[in-house]
Length: 415
Image 1: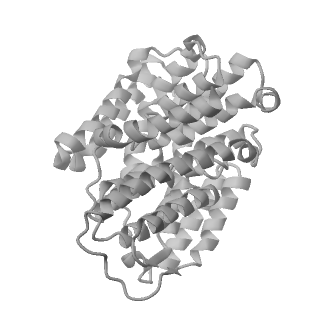
Image 2: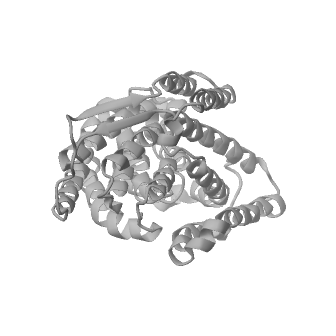
């Protein structure tokens, strides 16, 4: 984004309308929204494109956001396809302890294969295990832990941290500085989930019948080679070779897996990634003026402490894509401290820690906070789960559960 471009706040109206459409469309006009959301995203995106073309008279920001979107969709799309070729069967009784253990494992491995990879790998077996007692909270806590909070330790875990890695934050720099905060947050969210799951089990008439010992079976493990290829591409290849390698891994995985029954057993379709691709195309374009306004005005917002950066970057990461929001506040911190990234790592590391945690954690507070959220929602609805609406997700779960936990994290670690 060109720093010299002055963008008025009113130019963010299409983005606000995009958020309102995503929030209210499925709630009040679900069938109409299901048929027409691509046209809504296209129309609002077209308004912003015309605004940059005829009012601001520059297409450079649109070119930059197109490249960002291409990298974004290649990453989550390739992980979606490859993990869709791995079938995991968990045989046993879906006890609160087992469900909690699965969420913990998902949170841990999200740092190795990304929140998208971990989400796509585990959401289907998690839903199958709980068949007959599927409730919205199962999906919501899965999004909280596996699709977002879990990936706060490494650049592979979540896109904002990968951008930080590209800007000069060493790969393992965050781990010794945030592992305790990560563990504390994961433990609190898991404790709340365990309470929900125990309470839900009390409403069952009888214990589910299961013959045989607990076991986990996996099929299509040859796709782990393609998954490794994607991870290596993210780490070592520049654009556009990185994206081409990811597309190649996804295509090879799909062709190799297609003759088997794995896709059928996984109920694999391109519907979830199609929905994410279309909606996030609209979000990426319409959020351009909002991010430009933020870049131009953030220094005047009076941010001066890590705690303030935590709340500001976290709040906006809930509704803007958390990757560019991370960069916006990283640039703001550079301007405030007068330090570049290498110097800030040494002299003011708490700012980078606060922005990193906020971008990852607060991505869990809405469906649009992070790419995997929508995919998990779509897959879960296909499996028969009545997921909360956009506003219901926030009002019933994010505000009463996540925000107090995030506030406690701020109070104990980031004040």
